[in-house]
Image (cartoon, rainbow, N blue to C red):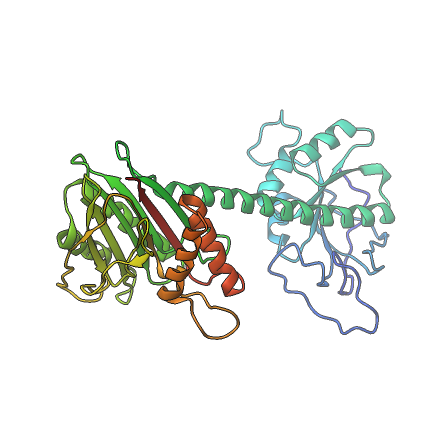
Length: 431
């Protein structure tokens, strides 16, 4: 069926199109032509591919102009095979005759040719061309995926030029909106996944109270290289662990999750102390992506009566203990062993510590103590953290409130967000 838009033989290339026109005295820039859509600040020549079955064309060419009044380049294909050959990345819009047959499609589908072109050119804007008065078919074409529809016998150069500009901009907007929606879905999925990877303490049957705070150093992440866990074994012992994989990226976060899950499985299987840490080192050596990656770890196993505990340190800061009537202090760290992954065949001695009848035990990663104090080079350090916790305890802070205040104050002293991951957990026993 002939289309009253003659085939244009040659139109000079110009710079214009989807972006606003640049001032006349501004230097011209050629936009890359690897994508169908272009940035608003770029300039490119708009081009139209007409797919219609008029084999001859006409000698009179209506002038098609972009928003800056520059000519729009036109190509014409007589069928879908020829259209596929001409459909290069510098084509921005397709004017499609809906009366064309579609290969391999049912004759009952009036929009078969449109569906074929949309599959062939998913990134291109499409204008559907239909018979005069057939608005229902045109509207259905838009619902299927075309940007707009036009009546065959009502076309003129001005109408078509405006329709091309509108279709290209609408396609660009639809594409940006779709990518934004896809990005939101991916972000939601990542957040759900990361939340699922954070531990759920297993403390059923224990009188100990548990609290934790976790802040990854990566921007917009929920999970970092720090990890922690707490479980109660059938004999009544409560096991707590906190660790830190060097680095802050997604690979380190994944390794931290693997180590946490391995620790829980090994602990529930009855391993403890040096034997457990040696096995965790084997896991790290097999799972790490680089031989330079290591992890620090602190494990505490609290006896069923809650009065004493075993402590193992693998290159990790010692926990802080607070008791009524005594200033908070760090547990001994003289027998601190090496970080996991540094020394093959390393050993990690287990120290016995007395806790008493009533106490609070805080395990933390170095992100809590390595933040700066003010604008200088001074770090908070363990001494500064101990002094801070002593003061906050004297103000009556306990549990979640204590950890929240500690992390917020460390951030405030640092002058903003901390560069490192921060994990802190607190176990409390009342006499």
